[in-house]
Image 1 (cartoon, rainbow, N blue to C red):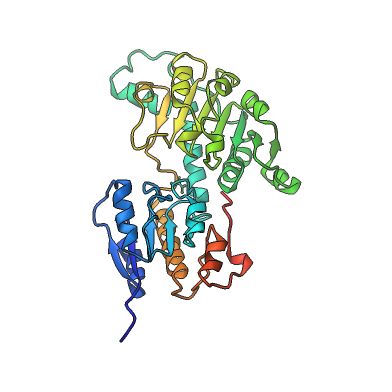
Image 2: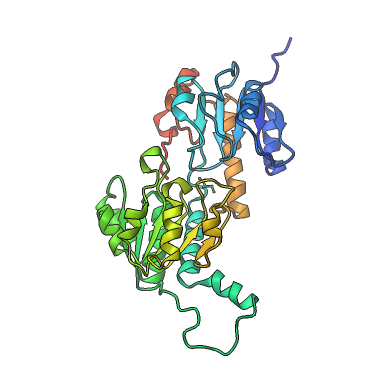
Length: 348
Ligand code: DGY
């Protein structure tokens, strides 16, 4: 008798031709409609399968994996993985993976687009024009802040942060200051044209501040009323990391009362819900978490997640060596010989 094929769950509709690759090795249960799952539904699906490919909307924590006898791999579609409890997965011997590298430049592009749109009031001006307000021309219509030659602040100088620094320093002649858990090597700083500063100095010096640090409870509401009060009233704030890093009510208040000029937000604490206090403001550019949303990059993310899942379940050319595993210990527990260089920690 032949062994039954492992079964995998794909939680959201993705590119069919890429998902079909899973069918070469596994029985695939794939969602045909975009679905918002309850935690119980996630747990139910995970209990039926050997591996899962999930999006940022599916939280996988200790509760969701409490009764999953077969589950061996959870592969995330995204570089950020705050929807996964990697410690709980490791304790259960379940391999966790993410999708770094392939989205770096696309996400940096969006960060820069938000920065420019917020600083130069692009969406506000467009709405104003469409609403028919463009009467006699005024020399003071929609005055914004310059991007070129200004000071770009970056909080979180991983790969995407560095992509933004390169765009700012080399494309727009900006002075770049950054703050990060650890300082970059001097030669990297030199190539990027970036200078390391303390957290407060970053807030005080930036004309445009971009947030690109991974979310963890330690940085919850790191940008709160106190932090915002240290920024220039003419500054712009861009968040392409995770919504929970910013106290959104404090931000809305600062924007409404002229203590901050503008903001560009791609991520929200309660997404897909956006606070009415933000929706009501004209000086904030809002996008629905589209940092990595170019066709090429989204396909590359799915291809990488498919490779991760295939390899984590011991199939395909890289069996046992998923390209971007987050928990080497789970791979070892699964009996794979772990070649150090194949295990890539989060380098976001
Ligand atoms: C990620 O990969 O973490 C991004 O936020 C998804 O666009």
